[in-house]
Length: 188
Image (cartoon, rainbow, N blue to C red; front, top):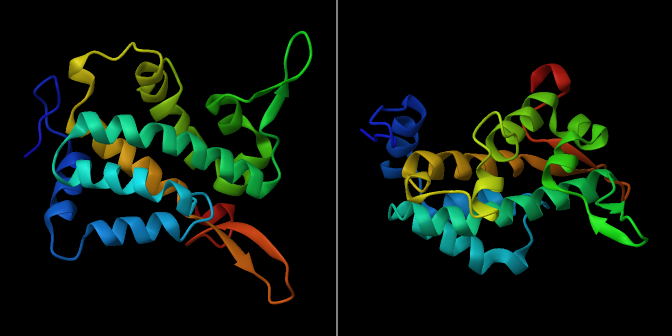
């Protein structure tokens, strides 16, 4: 049974550990799920392979450091896929990339992924009132205790959740984004 920093167990962490050690769950299964989505580009395969390998061997520090930026890029790719802007005007002219939080609040992206998924990702990655993993990691605010398998479980789950966004081919050369397994907002 996995224990978090505070010594408590997590049913989700226990379930993730059970799945991770079950014979039907493999590195290749995780990678196939990620790369089935247009949100994860093949150019990032070596980084994602290293992250999944680290996760499976229980190296939360490496897994989290590798996977969090890949999740941010995957959200950016999702925004491009659904037609949401990834740049915002910069004071003094020019453009900056929109922050992860701005992307996750974008109505177009929320419409494609669902309110539930974007709210979950914000709580996990960018909301200071919640886990805020991305900001703590990327701004150097995370202490050693922040790098545990409970957090690694959530980070991997976030990546797998983003990978649910697929492109449906309509057979006429046209595609549209859709969350795999959802027939509409009521199902997600």
